[in-house]
Length: 231
Image 1 (cartoon, rainbow, N blue to C red):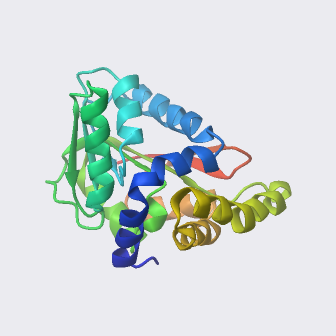
Image 2 (spheres, rainbow, N blue to C red; image 1 turned 180 degrees about the horizontal axis):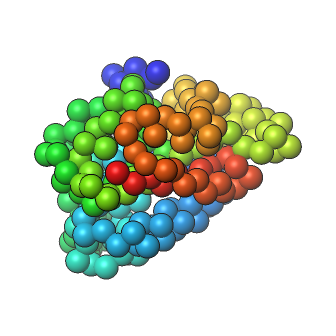
């Protein structure tokens, strides 16, 4: 499992160039992934949402645009420089009054039991030092009947894997080094994707944390999966 101190340091280093790198390295498909997530949350009809590992806030902003303005959104991350970027975007873009950003560790959430109707976490679960502990914390702060949405990289369809891992191991770190100046950070991120469970194993981890039946939507040739589970 990742070392939380090293992960925090890494994201602090790349915070200012993180958004640019994400859009470039995904070919812009990250926007579509977020839209699919927001659509799933909207169908659930929550009154308040916690976006964990919110980073620079892109998922929180997408939900603010795509959900009714009456829904309160809390964006939480343990890396303050990433949160600083989110707050800068919130202040410079205007609006987004229903979003509150605050610092918090996903493995020890500074939140009361049964605080939210929905929790989202996008491309952050694989960076948790203890996934079971993090998922158990999410289960704790969800209200009964609440929904968890995990958007994360996954293992792609078998025929696509040679092309995917060629890009992931060879091309992506080189491009990221040019954009962010930090090749090592993206070598770690690529390695974390390769070692992450496939969609079936991830469903099992979510269930073991106490959640009910898990529904999975695979995207982009299976390289990304959206898991939705109910408390």
